[in-house]
Length: 419
Ligand code: GDP
Ligand code: IMO
Ligand code: MG
Image (cartoon, rainbow, N blue to C red; front, side, top):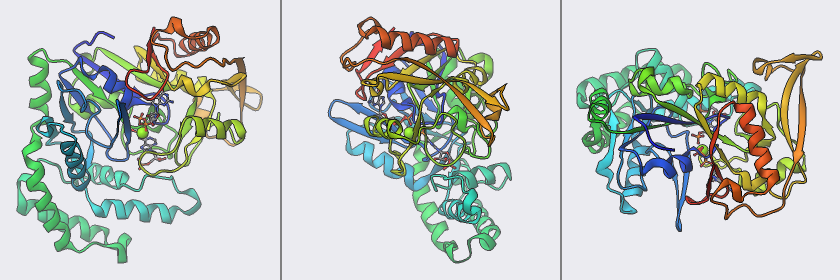
């Protein structure tokens, strides 16, 4: 992939597709890696040499020396989480002065996390299975125009006033779980003093870079099917994870984006509640979970596993306007005699679209393709893969309607077979 002015890399399923490792692979070719949405509900894993990193909010270009690392205005960020992550990176020898946070990003407070947990408890059987990080309540405050931005942190008194107001408003929900106002204010101002040197005018930063001819790689978080508008609502996150979210999250126009690359896993996973039409509740599902190490990076929860869902993938290709895709974790399928792909949805024997994913009478049609037994991990070109694996890739390209640029065959940075 030859970098262009602005490229977007995002998840095309329910998150954890391997976005972090794909961004790391390409990041050395760009000048800025920019996270455009979400917060520390994300966990992006990089494996480079004997180093394994799980990043929550800092963009996945950290192990490349060249790019600036920009946390865009569409994100919601915990000061404590960001400081911990910066400290972890500093201890690894990363130059953390490269990390910049947009003044438009919103702060996630401990009262957001408390409210997230209370909301989940109140939902009972209808709980969403959130990460409990306060992401939903922080975006709620943003939309309600009572959020606190990183730009606000420059004004101590105004920040303290807003915190007081927000705590008062949450008193009925939080009750005993209410943090003490003076503690929140004091902690916030102390942490803000450490973060403020990283805060920049986000619009000046990104447009200044573009106007100087710099190349920007926008990194998505979560996945298309968790988008608040186009995912399996209400079992979604609270941000726009699709390509349009990159425009909103960075403050750039659609015409400034050159390419949108979707990261798709060779099978599907989902963590948390909600519709999952191709889910396997059998030994094959367990096998995918074990071989794919499908346990949440943030919460440690086992991920639900299932076959590749072609209906969902086609939908994701459309709502993102994908230019191409990167296929990940193909090695996890090695050893299966036959591989299933959900190729159609039906309701009352009639074809249904992805919109029916959560319907109780949904039926799925599975198409079977041949598996392979050869170890894929040393392949660096697609021609080195067994025929059955190449057929599988060709099938998925047909589904997505776009070319697959690269296929990952192991978690390590170099375990990529180029097409
Ligand atoms: P992200 O949130 O999209 O960045 O993905 P995560 O990091 O949450 O989850 C992907 C997991 O799969 C991580 O543990 C990666 O190290 C691992 N992984 C990524 N690509 C591959 C691959 O091609 N093969 C295998 N076996 N593991 C991979
Ligand atoms: P990355 O970037 C997978 C899921 C949660 C839950 C729902 C809402 O690593 O792919 P939230 O805390 O966001 O309000 O939870 O979204 N979720 C993710 N699932 N990967 C993620 O991020 C996710 N971020 C949120 O499990 O179902
Ligand atoms: Mg993840």
